[in-house]
Length: 244
Image (cartoon, helix red, strand yellow):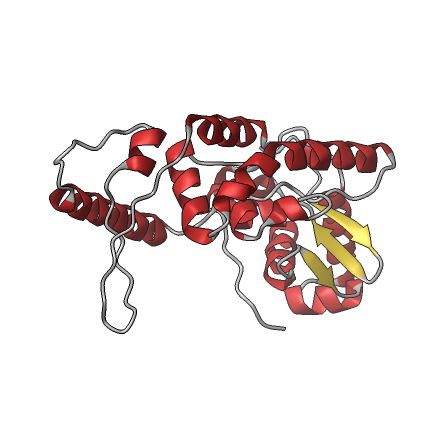
């Protein structure tokens, strides 16, 4: 068993922190054992051994974690934290918190890089036009992006039409998962996918179809994973999948 699990610092103010110590240990053990999809493959005796609690305490903790919690910070699944599946359990909000809790260092690295790009852009623009906080000006500014091809630097100018801009904003607003501002999300799409001009018109209809499919799964009482962060959704081309 190997891997890395981020622990949301809000856990110490959540309702789980009011549970007994055995339940807290079993919960954190489940988080540590879960894979990227939140799945924990284990028997109850095996989990009790890893968590270093008695079999009775482990069974009691699993019952608590599988039950509704009126004081949970998450309204999804009535506050339940795990669900029993064949061969183990699934941590219900594992994906949601994994995408939400990106490190502060990552945020500041992104902020410094973005500020440096804007500063260089302003210095290299022949027109000397001031940069705007709006999406259109951010995308249409005379941004110099250097690419090393046989040690030759080339300059690119990114433009976007009003229609494409409106279509992207409509898709971003429709998306049910966590997301950042339109400016940030659009620049991420442009950076990650060279075919972004063809992607934007397809986004809104794809998201609508995925929402409908998820509603059908809920009605059939099938497991429905949490929506990814919009950045992850774009990076993974999740509009091309069945449920995102």
